[in-house]
Length: 307
Image 1 (tube, rainbow, N blue to C red):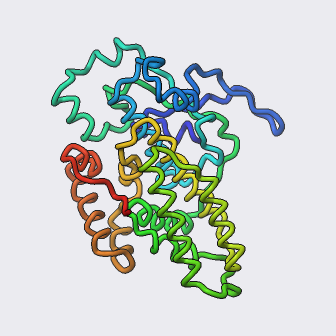
Image 2: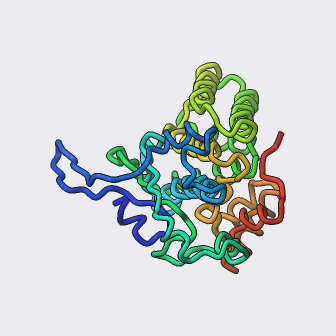
Image 3: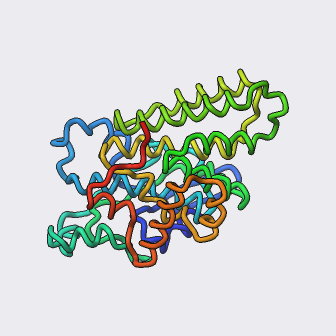
């Protein structure tokens, strides 16, 4: 199903082919590439992988986050164990990469304009190969819509709104003795987590998960595990991706899968006017085939992270 979902997506992503399937056994095709975690470990020594230019690393950061957001918001079918050890980087031959590149304005335009369905961006020098997809999580539509609101709040730095959504979706909050304090502290955990992504180029999501679980226990609030799993997965992928390029807003680049006209109309009742303004700009530029985050990057505008 993952292979079918990404077959005409335009994303530089592929999955191994199933060769033999029984209730007890799954045999997949052998794939070549470099383990993503190994690439991250070598990020301080670029001479060990000179095949990747700065622009390649930037596109790799964007692509990894975009693939995750597509799984959630377009396909409603999520890889349940997506971490750097389950991703490989398959570098393309230099001749293939250079055959359609002028190194100038045309390449920059290709970076902004979306790829046609069924094609990959010509200047990308890699494929992401995603492994170990046996743990997959189908997402009900109602959960996807809640996750959409969560993603909008997190990406546009409205952490109080994100905490409120998780509290409202709690399977049991009747025993919470201080809802306001719980939401305030949970918002701070999200803020600190994402700030560490930007300040350090990485994030220890396990620390934020532990902090959130401590808050749940302390304030006696039940959390929806599907929402929590998907949310921390998003933060984990963003943290890993930004180790390659600390300056790219790889969460914002995936918002083309999140922002829709129905979601805009819905979120106008709940989100701040600043967030609604970003959503309107996102949709308007999509109509012209432009990537809002890429336009912001080219103009040198600041990312969506509050101090």
